[in-house]
Image (cartoon, rainbow over the protein chains, first blue to last red):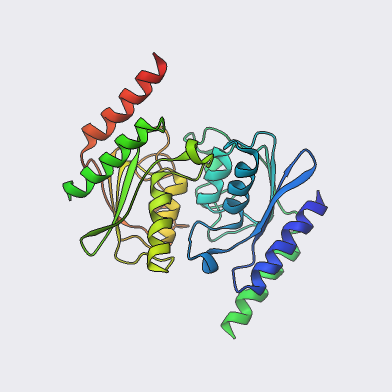
Amino acid sequence: MTDFMASALKEAEEAGKRNEVPVGAVLVLDGEIIAKAGNCTRELNDVTAHAEILVIREAAKKLSNERLIGADLYVTLEPCPMCAAAISFARIRRLYYGAEDQKSGAVDNGVRLYGDKSCHHAPEVYSGISETQSSLLLKEFFKTRRD
Amino acid sequence: MTDFMASALKEAEEAGKRNEVPVGAVLVLDGEIIAKAGNCTRELNDVTAHAEILVIREAAKKLSNERLIGADLYVTLEPCPMCAAAISFARIRRLYYGAEDQKSGAVDNGVRLYGDKSCHHAPEVYSGISETQSSLLLKEFFKTRRD
C-alpha cells in the first residue's frame, strides 16, 4: 500500500519540477499500477487535468471500459469535488489519499460528496497515507512561489 | 440567449442519436460560440466526457488559456458535481442550464456546490432555459432504452 503511495508521491514531485501544483496519483488493478500521472493543468491549459482525472482517463482507455471496477486510486491530496465525482462515476473501489485539503477537498471536507444522497457510488476511503510527505511537497512548492 | 440554448439542444439531440445520454453544451465568448459538444462518455470510454467538460477543454485549448474569463456556458441539464467544479475552476462567468437534475445535479440540487465555502468562484446561474425540450429529450431517450 505504501509502495503505491510512494509512486504517487514521485508523480507529485515530478509535477512540482514542471511548475505544476505537486499532486500525484496512481491507479492500481490486481496489484499492479495501470496508470500514473501528476497534475498537469498548466502544461495542458486544462483545468480538468488533475492527477486523478488523468489516471482515470488513461486507465479507461487502456481497459476500453469507462468503469474501473475493482481498481484502487492512490493520490497524494484529498480529491476536489470534480475528482471525487469522477472517482464515483468510474466506480473506483478504494480511495487512498495523503494530505487532507481543508480548503478545497470534497471527501472529508467541503461538500463531503460521498455522504450526499446524490452520490450513487462511494469508494471506501483511507486517508492520511504518507500525509507528512504529501503535505510537505505542497508547502514547499507554495513557499518557493511566494518567495 | 435562447439561440445558444437551441445550439446546445441540437448537440444533445445528436448525442442521443449516438446512444449517449442526450445532454449538450455550448460555450460562448463575446457573443460567439467557441466550443460545442454533446455527451460522449460511451464512445470515448471516458466518464469525464460530459458535454460541459468537453467544451471547457476545447475552448481552453483554442484560447491557450485554462481560465475562460468572461465565457458563458449553456447546457441542457443541470451540471453534476464534476462539471460544476470544472465550471468554477475555469472561472466561467454565467451558467445557463435547461432541466434540473434532482437525482445527480450539484447546482440547485445535491451538494449545491456554489453555495459551499470550499467553492472559490461561482458563476451566475440561470436555470429553466428551454427546460421542456431538454427534459423531453432525456425522458424519450430513457423510455426507448427501457422498452
